[in-house]
Image 1: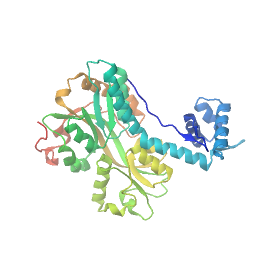
Image 2: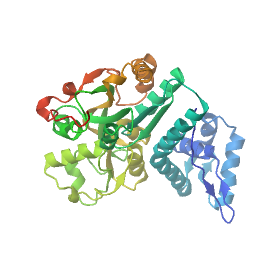
Image 3: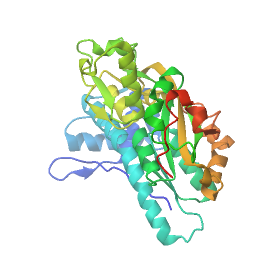
Image 4: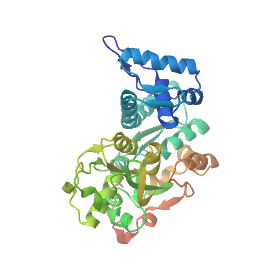
Length: 367
């Protein structure tokens, strides 16, 4: 069973009217292509319909959303720009949460409607754009119900250790940075019973407005006067990465304006920078590209799923491995810039990913 939750806007004076979702698509294309005619064609509506929507909302709001000039194309007005910014920011902030709630509800209803011999697969995972692709492919190819909920890396692993989910998604920098962060992860894993499944490799970096007008190239630049930063929440893999980079640079977090301002997804960080509400943040490359931002890489990292060896032979996790190793998954991920699905589906022991000298050899927490 598939459930989709969406946001509805109502705008107007006195008696607000529901705003058509296709209006945002038109505004976005006008901003990118500079033409209402092109926007109508690319969004599958007639020019007359697109023109009518613009005139309708001009009348309701008392201001035009776009300037339409014969022979000179179209540009968004400040009202159109602000509406599009609001939609992108709200969607980036709430869409992953709505997606998680829909997944949780679908799992509950699935148990009432279907008498499936395969129980739902529950995954708590750090936010990443490959995970919804994996979930959708697994459900469409096998019919297995997947409950995917986004949480921070460490929170996902804590819940996995407590038996609240079947798999936990987290990301870890490659190389020396990952070795230094390892103890935060290994204390939540049991090397005797757990194993790790590679999902993708990806890049994280500093994101700024197109053209990098604030000239941010390294974390030291975040301390400059007037630079407004947007952070991720404590316990997220991105926050752990940033704190380690600051430590290496000898920077106290309080020197960064906005260090305490937090968003819960990469897309929300990118939306804040794109809107001008922040000058810089750290996010994955596809989030930056989606919002037309400048991206300066700071770390390559692996995205992993922690699972139990005893479950590998079960139907759900066996099918998950098959999907991860499939050409369909690799094709889907190939559209995400900075992502590499080449190692997808590889199985590793805890000691292979976290060598004992990194602090992984600890007393297991679970019997």
